[in-house]
Image 1: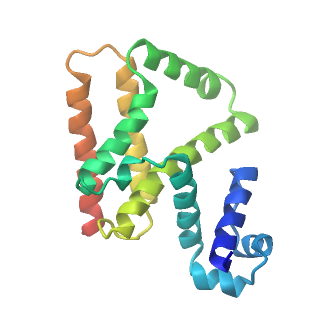
Image 2 (image 1 turned 135 degrees about the vertical axis):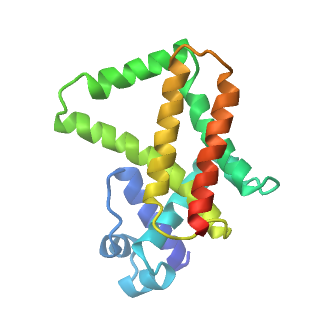
Length: 195
């Protein structure tokens, strides 16, 4: 096994053991049994290491991820990925139950450290998934490799809003309005990355 593979494996193990783990260069290098120079050779920045580890994890967890379907334009692939997230939220009664559970778990109780930690872990997992999709598009040259934090937060806010709409009584086609909203959000992200 080469040093690049050792590094990726060590970092993935660290995340598997603790999803809150910070992938510091020294800790990952020590775990992989390689020098920090070797790690920096393969991954010049901590961001490059994190992106590579997330890509590796998602390749194994979601082998048929819509973002990899290059027969479709990047815009359509990203919308399809966002739709997958919404599909898991359900519609109508199922969406109401999901939001009720979220309310009971994170909004109704006092914001103790345990509640805060649980929510932040959930939020990090969601953000990681969207970051992975945007990273794949950046690797294709569709997006810049700039810090994607604002883009991720924006797309998550759109998804949260749409999932709440799924729980509320609807006057028109949810599918049509969701599709319009998702394309507007994706167009905004793709456009801002090229300007």
